[in-house]
Image (cartoon, rainbow, N blue to C red; front, side, top):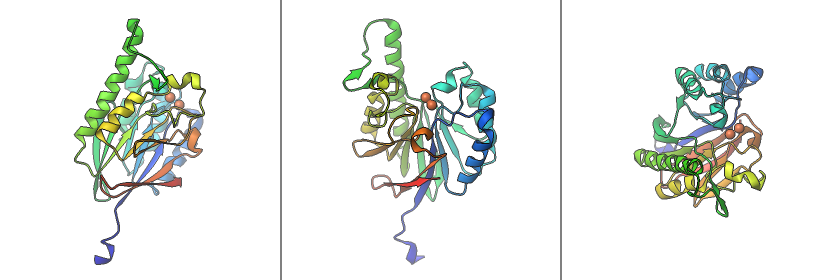
Length: 259
Ligand SMILES: [Fe+2]
Ligand SMILES: [Fe+2]
């Protein structure tokens, strides 16, 4: 249809972090996920899917996701590791059709475009002015190495999906300090690491989503790349809808609003 040639395709992403599912909020989770299906093309969950990482908490989220016809991508958060049963949490969600990303990437076709997603939890380390150095006791250096592995996985994933029209990075920990502002300065080192951002700046992306900083701020940037803290405590909604428009290199992100 000639009349449609100027209309750029749009991918509607419903994003939420820190859902912290449990039996106590089963009804709310069910109804939120049922509603958002009509308002988005894809759902992205930025970790802390459960309250304390118990499989029965993950089952609440899995039940809500298993009824959906749109794709769901998720990463785990620190809470999902607390009970030492993260593998079971991930398996339950995977069985319900959720693509749980862990230092990995995936792609799907939405609105005639290839949408690529790099997903990983991220880790701690801090931001310029207060960073954990690669120095001293082996235990501390192990923490540094873990964040390095996360950053390398982001870079590797972004290169793997370089052919996609649009590329999203889905994290739990923050890659920029701007989106943790509001949290006490003394814990910023535990909320994310700017080394995660280095990979994103080097490889490019169209949108970065994370959670974890419940008292943080909504918006940040890595150069020209928009970063959003989509923790439900920050957005104040069950989901926030982003319109991702156009092909990579000329993409635009519209912060459409709450769902
Ligand atoms: Fe959380
Ligand atoms: Fe968290």
